[in-house]
Length: 143
Image (cartoon, rainbow, N blue to C red; front, side, top):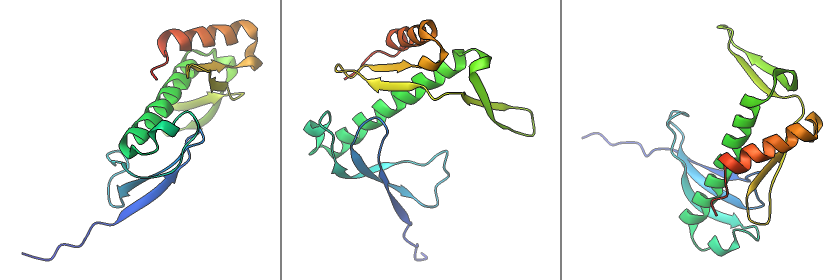
């Protein structure tokens, strides 16, 4: 049996944009990006909302990841339903597939109940209210 080389493991420090926590996760350097598995490695810092998870490495990472994914999916849905005049083309591939983004970045935050609120005020009050209602109806809090 040949000696196997140990797999190279990278450690990445993550500062999610959904809170002020800082976490580290490990991943295999040779893994395909689409199949890569991030394994919680270390809690660097916690925000007041997640401080109760400081001693629970896996629980802390899962809570932050879920919150961040929730926000990303909700923003993608808002973008998908936004009228074209409020979208900018940011990329186009050889097959003509177009990637859009907001002409003006949406304002989002979590309220005191940790419910996600997205409001693009640049598009007018009525549209901002409809986006907020959309998010609250289809992406409720999950604390």
